Length: 301
Length: 197
Image (cartoon, rainbow over all chains, first blue to last red; front, side):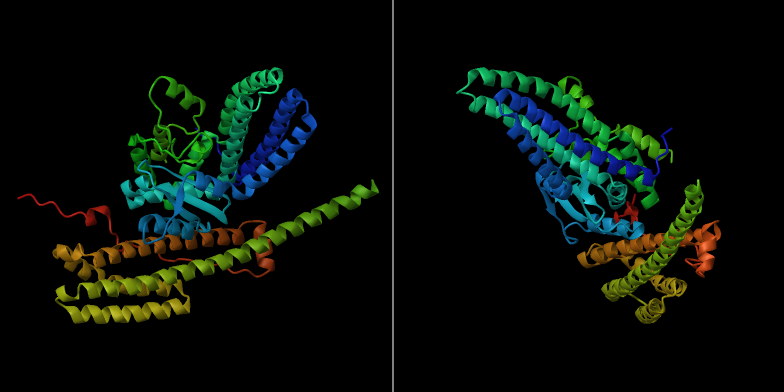
């Protein structure tokens, strides 16, 4: 049996986790700067810079995570005329739940997927791929959108979007340091070798930590809870069940998704279920419960 | 010792006041939301009352008993309009039932004229009707949920004491259960019937 989490508790936890995550991010960046700075011999200014930088990017991630995520995903705003069912179904759920109408976007991709982002229910956006909208029926789109709107109602979206931006920033910074070691280290070979070693070690440590952070933040419970809330919104489990069934059949990878944004989507956008290297990566980054489990739970409601 | 004796009743009073204020605010804001949801039902019924005559107009050339249907629709539309203005949700839904009585006749015409049913205008009107009836049922549900929450606070201890103190009255909400009179355009309606000869 699933543990019982009520919506108030769940949204309270999301706020706590968001704060914890931002503090953790700042601490990590300062520590990283301290280690790198120690090797260069100027840790004070680098630590100061890292502090300002991490503070700034936390601020940005709070206010602009949705815009960053939207532009990373190449999402375009939609009108009612273009996507009648998508637009009106979200409008209807908004009427029924009192959640303000989110802004709507599409990703031009034949893979089927959807996600919600934003910092609170007054600043939220729902995104669907054109593949999803064209291949699902109205009642199925309704199920998927009810799932996304319950992420908005449960205050999941802030945490999930902040995770996306902060994790993306860490990946970016580690990447920068790599490049600096290759292009800027000519004058001082001794130091740059040291940096190389440290960066290699740090990168090896950072990757699994990031994976762990995403997993912690995006507990699988959240997806089950959103599915259950979706049914409460639409009173029609069959819409979501058959939508999930179709999403499960879809084997296409979503091009615009990356590791930092994968957890936002309703189903895993990478679709690597086969054996081999892909499977390990998938397990490490598995932020979504298996669709079969979700369908079983919905069928039992 | 003296301090704590004074402090405890003070804490209790503060707690009670906070509770009373939150209940008072909840009841008042729910009342506003109930009104808004009734308004929403009215808006959607009005929209429906514009769509159905349009649909009837689109089928005009194919109608056999034209006049009766159109006068019925005009009457029903007036009735809905005045019911929505009165803000009485029961009246609105009753007026709507009358409007819905025209639907079977329109449906018969559409079913027997596939080329009409396939026209862009009719398709557009039909999907707007489906959406409108979805919106009505979502708004009804919201009204039912809000009324239940509100009325529960009025009878459950200790919130009932605060409600009584400020003279809150129970909300009527929806009396009649949802009837199956909505125009349901299911997927099977939109595919052409298979005929085995």
